[in-house]
Image 1 (cartoon, rainbow, N blue to C red):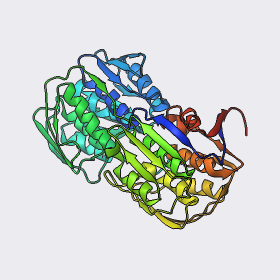
Image 2: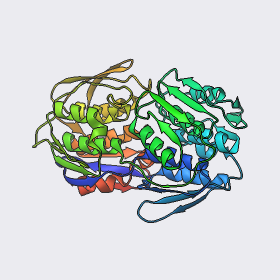
Image 3: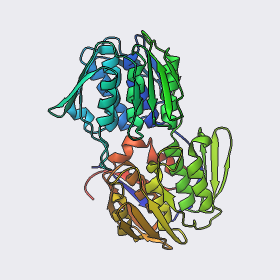
Length: 421
């Protein structure tokens, strides 16, 4: 099994380019199931989760062509089996995004209950309740969601909690429903906005994306289009933290500064000089040790849970004491135990972590437990004395495109090795 070996002590410097956002590409790929013509998607990141979604679409009968320049064409007119099997869905929670489109256009679906990172409960109840409100008959049996409907009918749906995939699934289903659907307490993430823009380019009528109320006027059909996925804000933030934690200077091109306002605010608190342009962000620590910053995660536009682990690594070597409060997932602190193996001084009480920054960490063997935890351990390894050996890096390949190659462009000493530690 592959591992990453990181030799710390290098101040990162240089420029990398943000890849397309995984969390936008996956729902847009699923949206191809709604179209009666091919959908061409640009800036698709080459990631394990994307490969899994493409394989899933192909298993259903879609014709998928992967071209040059990160472009994917999906022709889903000949779906023969509206079925998402466990062996694919278990590795990636976003597989559930095929549920709404399948029911809306093909009138039935059998989708395995999803897997993905073990970071806490992410129940499908809101997806099911929303589809039932639109007129689908849904039952959960034998580990699968079975859904069936004639043409769906628009409805008012009030989500009990903010859910990104739930908002996306129901928004896609509603595009082919009869009449108007209103989704209240909707997720506001940029990836939701990107999906809505793609659906509108396909002929849908979606308004309000980016606010907590989304309105969808159902259409008889949706066509194909060409659409380019937005850049990944979490990858952008991760590389900026890599610059900050090493006291370096890093520029991320192809980025959307407006999508990472909360992260940039915390990096400035940590002592970084941050400048932005229309499609780039530059961070310069000027060789200084970062200052400790408090973090509290919450749905967008607040500080993202997907950046919590990276800031835990930053705070581990920062000057001062910090508090991190995780409000989104109840089991997203598994990386803290691994950071302690590197010498981090921290304590955990429920969903609150207190981190007392130390001047230096020491390299050691550690194990990644989820996608963002993997990134945090790599970041910690960049400033640890000696070599940090990170196992179970298949998590990284699910969400970061050419991660070690891009860090290498910034001067990091990092390599991928195979075999037992």
